[in-house]
Length: 186
Ligand SMILES: [Fe+2]
Image 1: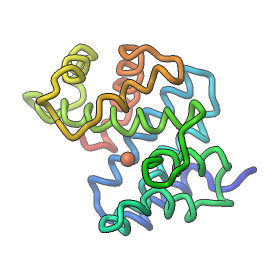
Image 2: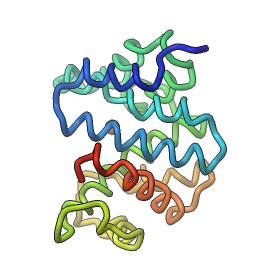
Image 3: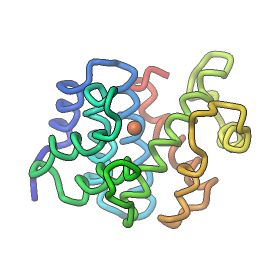
Image 4: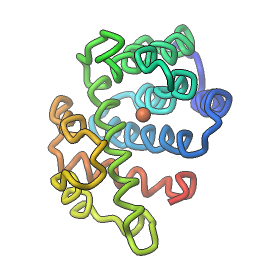
């Protein structure tokens, strides 16, 4: 199916999300998704769109988190591939009941969590830039449970479900985010 172009997906983010930080979060997740897709020889268009669109309902579901993911999925149903819709539902499987089962589902969950840890790591660098972040810095933060406590390390480690070692995943994700540092403002 053709559906939304990448640019139209970015436009959807802008339409649905007013918070700049949240928009940047979705750009970061889509960057990591693109990096994984290229590495694993998957369809980058699908992976990028899942990353871009997964949280477009975040602002309207703040008070009813059980609807998170479901509303995003409904908003894009018929406009993107079913694989993307399912990945969006599965990233909040605890509430939507749509269990992750395919690489793209695990990819989205892991990229969502890794993006947060990379941003948190960049923010404690002397100049708060991505450029200063090394793979080893992020690897240390994965093991430091007192750092950025709200980020679930088990979700990051789901990279194994799509066949990537943790260090390879961190390196791929970090590189992909660095290439987009301007848009991410880091
Ligand atoms: Fe997210």
